[in-house]
Each structure stands twice: as C-alpha cells, then as structure tokens.
Amino acid sequence: MTALGPVLAGTQILVTAQRRAADLSLALGRRGADVTIAASLGVESHIDEDTLLAQTRQMIATGTDIVVVTTGIGFRGWLDTAEAAGMGHELIEALESVRLIARGPKARGALQAAGLVPDWVAESETSAEIAEFLATEGVKGLSIAVQHHGAGDDGLEQRLRAAGGRPFGLVVYRWGAPPDPSAVERSVRDAAAGSYDSVVFTSAPGAAAWLAAVNDAGVDDELLRLEKDRRLVLAAVGPVTADPLRAAGFDPLLPDRARLGALVRSLVMYLGDASENVATPAGLLRVRATAATLNHEVLPVSPSGLAILRALASEPGSVRSREELLAVLPGDSGDPHSAEVAVARLREAIGQPIVQTVVKRGYRLAIAEPTP
Figure 1: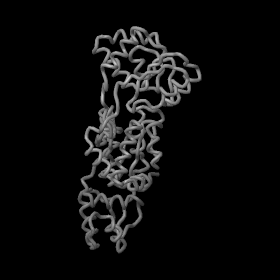
Figure 2: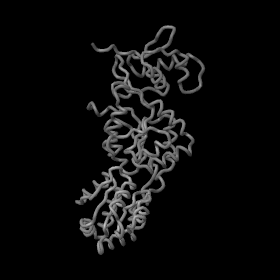
Figure 3: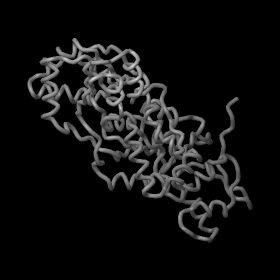
C-alpha cells in the first residue's frame, strides 16, 4: 500500500452527480475512501432527436455564422447523434468553417478532441460572459446555434436576439428527475446524521436539487452545524456549481481549477490534512464520520467507541470525565458505569494503549512525545 493510497481510509464521501460519477468514485476509492452515489438529477438524452437531426442537416447544407458550445457532454452527444445518422463527418467539416465559442474548459476540450479549435472561450463558464462578449462584438443579422446545457435556455438566446442576432437552440440533453429519488432522500438524512465526511457536487442544478431535498427534509440547520464543526465539507467542482451552496449559507471547498482531477486533489488534501491527525504512541489517530483510523488503518470500533474517541480527540491530552463521555454515547443511559464499559471495549478493539485512565478524574488520549 502506497503512502497516498490509504490517506482517505475510513472516509465516507457522497457524490451527488450522475455524469462522471464513476470516475469520481474510482479516483477517490483509490485513496481509500468509501463512496456513495446518489444522483440528485438525471440526464435525459436526445429530447427531440428528429428536430436535432433536422437542424444539423440544415447547418450542413446552408451553414451558420456562430456555434456556441456550452458543455462537453452536450457537444459529444451531438456528434454521436450525427454519427449514428451517418453525417458525423459532414458535421465536423461544417464546423471547421464556423466561428466556435466555448463556455469553459470542458467545452473547449470536447471541441479540441474532435479536431476543432474554438475561436474564444468563456473562462468563467457562464452564458452571461458569452452574451456580453458577442453582443459587444456585434451579432446583428448573424445566425447563431446555441447548444443548450442540461438546464435548457438560460437567457443566452434572448440576449443575443436583443442584440440583433438570429439564435436557435440545439437540445441534446436535459436535466430530469433523479434516477432514484429515495436514494437522494436517504443521502440527505444520512448527511444530516453525520454519516458523511464530504458531499461532492459537479453542477449547479445538481447542487440546487440536493439542497431542495435538504429543505424538504428540514435538516438545513443540522448540515450547517456539521460544516461549522468541521465534521462535514461540501465540495464543488467550480464557482458556478458553488453558487447555490453559498446562497444557502454553506462555505464549499473549491479546487484551484474547475476540473474533476483538481476537485479530487483538493478533497484528498483537505480530508487527508495531517493537522487533523492526533499523534499517539501507537501512531496517527484520525476520527472520521463513521470510522477511526490508526496509521491509516481502519479500527474495528463500535459506534460507542467512535463517540468516545471523537470526544477525546477533540482536545487531545485533555481529561474527559465519565459523565462527559456518558453524554456522548448513543442511547440514553444515565449509569456512569456504561462509560467505563464502553472505554474497556474500545481499548480491546484498538489493541493499543492509547486511552489512558486518569485516577479519580476520567480518561484522555495518550499523546506522543515530540521528536527532538
């Protein structure tokens, strides 16, 4: 096992996306994380394939002045549809003589993968930036094809039309209902119960849909409290995706670049932050949402043992009384002896002398002496 591999051992991560969810799950799983996928929205492909093909034939026959590509998946879906209809090559040739505008790096990457070079890229990944750029340059009388993203027309065509252009939409896919609504509802309640270390978002509509489920379940305050206590981090692939989360009062983790790979690296760095480890004589202790690790190996502790470890690790070296530990144990037992039993079982599960008894006072974690 490599040094990087187990850094997320015992970590529970919820992925709310359908697109690229498998890639995210694989990348995080390689670092030791346990990943749950509960897509908050589904993707409906080819809403009206006949209309899309008719528009494509028209573009090939008569051309258009500008094509705006808003998403990589949408552009690839358009090419796949044209290819299946036997006109993929003709579409690529037609696009070679068209001015191509990309909404962000993913759209640019899809164009480049097809051998096409965008004339301009909206680095903010917003349609508003595209509208401002084209309107400033002038689009009067120009024919403009706009490949819609999953949320449909977001006002771009209206602004281009107001500027004198002749825009028309290409609908390749659209956001739809989640493939498993019960899984979304369950994920919201589990997150509010502290079962996840992180919830990951890859699109603004997906984030908004998950937050709507949060609101329906009435667990907004619980999630905000978990984030404030650093027991939960909401992570977004970019600033556009983060907007609904910020509007709801959250402070999402963002990578330095709006890429899935950068998002994974940010999560690994944040969730694997060495400063969150407690140095004990037996090694590095880390308390996660549903597990504890020692030197990145998951410990076989019970929920009661995990609750005690979390209380002791919150202030390493400080003494916690039996009454304080009893208060954090699951259930409603009022017998201080229950805390003693839970500590004994925790010690047995760990197999290392890292939970010390302080006579007549309580318990504390054994802290490793600093290395000279």
